[in-house]
Length: 127
Image 1 (spheres, rainbow, N blue to C red):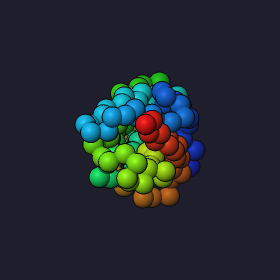
Image 2 (image 1 turned 90 degrees about the vertical axis):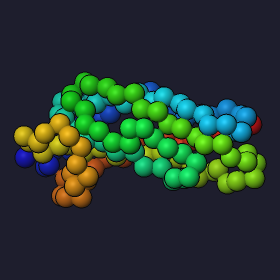
Image 3 (image 1 turned 90 degrees about the horizontal axis):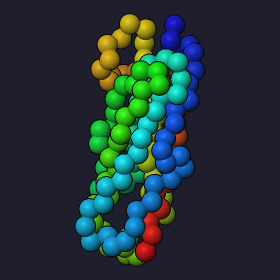
């Protein structure tokens, strides 16, 4: 039943983008708060366009209604100005968990017929 109802909204703080500031000769970490604003339990997972530069910890999880989690987005050292950064972003995907499912993340929730929602957060690098 849960699979036929679209997942509710999530709130991310920050809402629109993640900003890293120079210098880029060391690892940076930025924290994002993810809140399940809907009325059902959701499974969520982050993806990134640049696996070698960007990391997310924890990369996935489960949130009850109104529950939040703090996620660390890290940017490894890189040669600013010498590497392409225009397309860097992280994407959070979320979907309703099946009725009665344990509060433990399962990748297959995203592979069935249920609706998966996405939110893109572009990465901005300040020189």
